[in-house]
Image 1: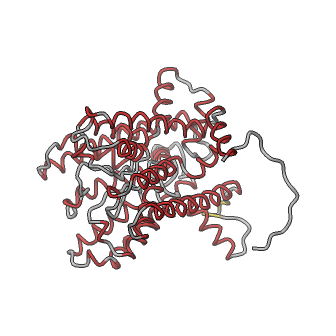
Image 2: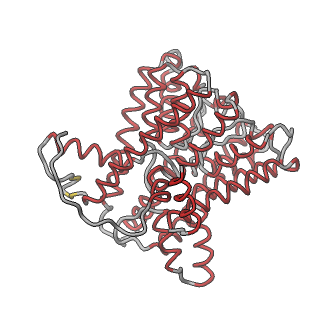
Length: 444
């Protein structure tokens, strides 16, 4: 305990880039929590301090799990606070701040560059200043186009408050937040192809990440002759996992077998999309799914989106790297290669550490929930995986959690937003690098 307190003191008094990011998220969660507890931001005044903290953390972490109704229990002012937190969490508060500084001064300080590189994992050759400008530009354009498309669809369907609903859900989908102004999410539009497609495109665009968007733009405009290896891995992994997931859900989920074929395919595609992109919206009741489908969605939530995007999870590149390690071991190769290119050894170390810490966090979070809650264990694991992956899907138990359970899920959501590896580095990063030690064989 004493060592942990010393680490926390070190976190506050000697902030490095990863620590600044962690403290910044805590700061904005605190502001959001205070605002959401005020009666002027609530419609029914039923949100307690714990509920406000839960909601603020869920919004900033772009998760979407809720203990109170976003539409019924928060008024317009409260919903604007939630949307602002979603935007800060999705794009990154440091990104918006750095963009404002860069726009006014034309340069970024060395400290801001370091923090930017901490927030965004970028391939070699990407300049942080230009990347931040591209992130903001793509965000404004994509969310704007998404809002226009949703407004047209909602107008056709006669949905009330369609302007605010279009803006809110465009930002929520692109930031893969999962917050919805309808208590049953988009279940009432399960068969609407246009709305499903718009939300899916927004979510996939945010989930594949700004590296791919910038890389593709450079390729289209002729600035580069080919996509980077990172973009290729992201696109192939996302497409492959999505196709396999849709096929398994389409043939394996009993509750959709009576749907017309096109609705069954649409429902399967949307539920797989919402898990792999970590957006957390749904068009069929998650609580009624079979255990096989819940397990499938859990695995997709664990894999999650891609680096330097708005989604959470382990990340497709990390999953691909670990898969590459397994393939190389089975083929007796000493390097992990994709398209004839070897992955640097330090990236493999990071992927391995990320997987280990992510699995540890999931196990620990599920265990703590099992101590405090009485729901079936598979529902608790699903809830924890959703929180850690910043997804927002739930079997319906979130509002019924005890206060201690809500606090545990809040902590897991925060951990998922910062990242288990980044959080561990924020706590335990040493002041100097240790030297090399003598080696000795270890049988595995």
